[in-house]
Amino acid sequence: MIQLKKGENYSKKVKTIELENLNLSENIYSNEHVDWHYHENFYFVYLLHGQLYETNRKESYTLNPGTLLFHNWQDAHFNINKNEISKGFHMEIEPAWFEGTMINPSIIEGSLRVEDPMQVILFDKIYQEAKILDCTSDISINTLLVRLFGDLLKMNEISSRKTPNWVPIIKNILHDEDERKLSLKYLSDELNIHPVHLSNDFSKYFNQMTIGDYIRSIKINRAITLLKKGSLSVTEISYICHFSDQSHFIRIFRKYMGITPLQYMKICKK
Image (cartoon, one colour):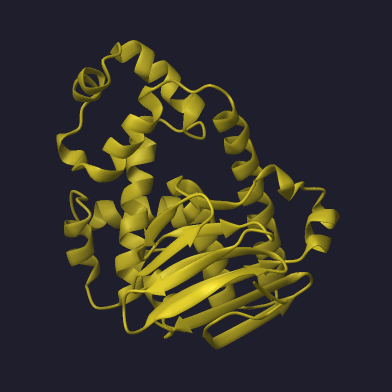
């Protein structure tokens, strides 16, 4: 099986940034099939456009725009490109980075599909910094990455405990169903648990977020994916993502991302 060394991957690089113990790149995938391989270093893949199918030793899944994956260095996988051309943002992390930050990455085993929307937002901010690339981008990227791993390790601890049966069910509901029909009563009925119990315990298993904050972060992730395409207006995206109006969308987006949707679109075009 092929081991890919630092900076190597099966794609065409359109931009590469070298920081101390970090390699960041934008990549175009044009190969229809990539055989089994693993990477020398720890690796994030953030799909920007297109669609990929990935299989590792534990599971298979389809990657759509906005999907974030983390690969441990020893984890083997292969890919199928479902579009003629797909595009992704990669971050390769050398072991020395973890030593310098005193983070133990071995706690996260194999491949991990990052599903927490706030963690995806954190990584998207790293992507933004790579697009801006000014004198503060280095420290910003490192700070965001430390925060991301802190969250991932915390969530890993939670998942290693026995979680209630309702946790994966409500996660699927919140990600897949139209949030406009959701209510505390509806969720409680679907999960067959008391509304007080759900209200009190939700944050324990969802990164200290309320149900409302979790739903908003999912909507922001959907908006981010559409903004990257650059083919829709802010008004159209606010409607598609079920914000009450454009001003509400702008206000919530700025709260989560620190910038307006229009500013975000301009950064993505760089």
